[in-house]
Length: 179
Image 1 (cartoon, helix red, strand yellow):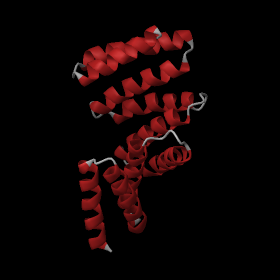
Image 2: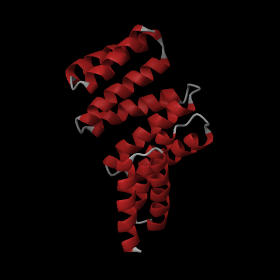
Image 3: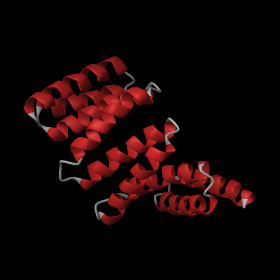
Image 4: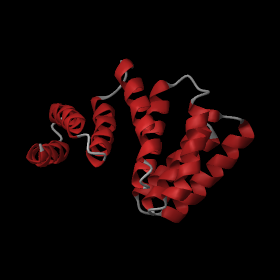
């Protein structure tokens, strides 16, 4: 395990323990080491760690360039699931900022990658369907939103994730009232 990988692991641990200053230090050092060594995979994970810290603080504008760089690096690697996961989070950042026109292609790309990869977890697929359903709801594409919410609900139900099932069911009930 590289030194950058250890720092990334420590950064995630610090984030889970609500020690953002330690996480920031660890991810920042990991970025420096990964850049120096040319390890693109470590750099992707370190950038995403820093980006998630910014998102935790509600600062999508600072998270966006970190995720954009991570996506660009993912495109040079042979790991479609890492790309799908990273581009989905970039879509979330765009959607949170109201940049629907930039979020939608991110979600479509992530879903396309997840759907063709046999290694995709059901949870990753559900978590990619959900934000696109939200986006379609926001843009008034009710039928498409309902189709996506039904898919998300079924995926979450297959995992026995009541919170996801409840959210999707509530959204579907509300949308059916608009139809």
